[in-house]
Amino acid sequence: MGRWEPDARGRLAKAALDLYDRNGYEQTTVAEIAAQAGVTERTFFRHYADKREVLFDGSQDLQARMVAAVLAAPAGLAPLDAVAYALDAAAELMRSRHAFARRRRRVIHSHPELRSREVMKLTVLSDALAAALRDREVAEPAASLAAAAAIDVFHVGFEQWVGAAEENDFGALLRDLLGQLRTLAAG
Amino acid sequence: MGRWEPDARGRLAKAALDLYDRNGYEQTTVAEIAAQAGVTERTFFRHYADKREVLFDGSQDLQARMVAAVLAAPAGLAPLDAVAYALDAAAELMRSRHAFARRRRRVIHSHPELRSREVMKLTVLSDALAAALRDREVAEPAASLAAAAAIDVFHVGFEQWVGAAEENDFGALLRDLLGQLRTLAAG
Image (cartoon, rainbow over all chains, first blue to last red; front, top):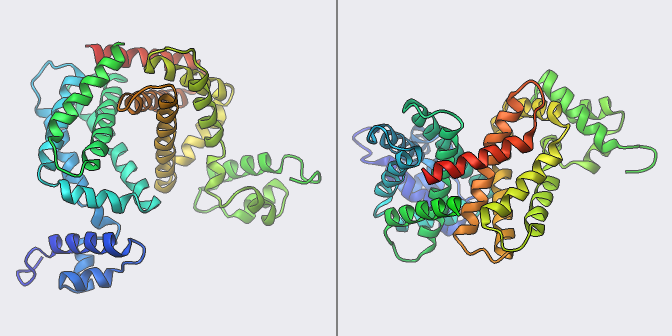
């Protein structure tokens, strides 16, 4: 945080992912992460509550952007059209983070506790989108169902996106999946 | 398990829920649960790995029935029509368990770790339904999207069902929500 540690937070996050991916999440200590980032353990704990939290640094930003996109979407849209704006915002945020996301996913899936936290974050995100839809005067249960459908599309699309070795257009992928969900529901 | 402990498993589950609900999940010990059920701690651990597991005893049965329902559904159904059979099976299993489900939900929501496990169980359930759909020759991503949509309906419906003080028809509620999801997607 001080001027003597330019971007300590970012360097800690990068060091943590490097070490988790190379040596395993369980095997890596906060001391090792701090050393690789060139800071003290104390600095680590100024930025992150624990070594798990480093991996979920982006969740709040993702949620804030997706919620803001729903709230800013044109008035009068159908619920699923409003959450489509949240999916666009998510894709925009992920742009150029494909390599990072692939490595992060590998670490997350290596450990049940991390996977469980990831899934919980998606549930919290779904609840936040439902609340944003209610702010747009969408009634329940439509708000919760539309929000959950958007998160399904995000989840399925994310797995597909990070599963590919090369970065492809995440936004186009999400729009295509939303279209497929519509077709399924109509069929 | 022995004849000298008739339904020790069921009595332990009931004792655990009673104590969690009355005294709090954190505050309750395995020793107290065993004592209230009239068995030894050793018997507790023959049935459950830890005090958390007692609350998730029914998850495997629920999953097995929902998967079996998808696999047994008439051939040639659209994916969402096939998973509707899983929702019927879930409602059938829950019948007459409303009071239990309400108390259980209160305990689950009192503790983030329990809530996180509950959400993870739903994700595992969704993956299992997707696999069952693939066994029915449903391709990806349709299988994953339809399975996730069914779990959304189950999740939203369950909250609504246990939110009501009196038991109402869970199956009818789930069918109605699936219909609303179809309308949303079409709209």
